[in-house]
Image: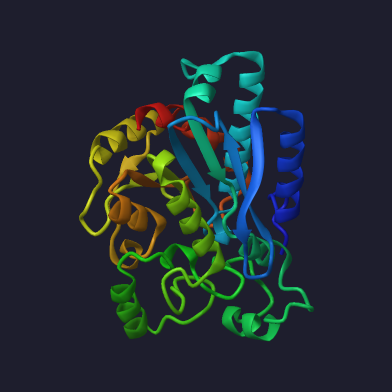
Length: 302
């Protein structure tokens, strides 16, 4: 059941605390807690007084957890370069640090990741319900949060329409696709939307990372924020990924949908890697190499 060398919640927190202790440029905090009470980490790199910034979010879905490792690679890489004053992708990292704030939520769904990697603990008060949702003890394909809600369908963006489709399709709480009882009903989504709402003056764009397909999405039900098409082309050129449009159930209730429609600012859903989820950890390095220029460049393009 355990994915060899894949990062679980405890390992994530330990590595973040270690990075925070070693680097004065990296600040670790928490935006809230999950259904099961696990705190959701937020990593901030950059001048706290910077007037512009971006937000990177990964691991809405538990089977896409290698994106957490990709984010950690970036955090460690950036912290190391700032300390030595070196450049990244032609960018002076100390100047970038001074001028832009980069905020990162490396694992939005710790509960789901723990279920997938370690199974459901006997002491879990939802154990019987979760086993029924999942159809047994093997949680390797579990995507949802701690109580069977797909976090990337829980945002208030086309929620009512999705709910109608969900009912017609017979989608119920379980591994994936169930949107929850109401928009932002899940503490993880409530935490991130509250964080964005409170910091919107310095969040000028969002990159949210999923797997698989090497695709870039930026429109929400046909709507796009100003400047998004240009930025999508730049990201496509840097990564080699293709620009796509979401279809069907994927068109509703996601972070990109919510941010674009509420704030009219650019947001991009980036599907990393190739294969079938969960992707192997062997792809972490290659995914990071393809994303590296975008991660450093996006804050100054936005």
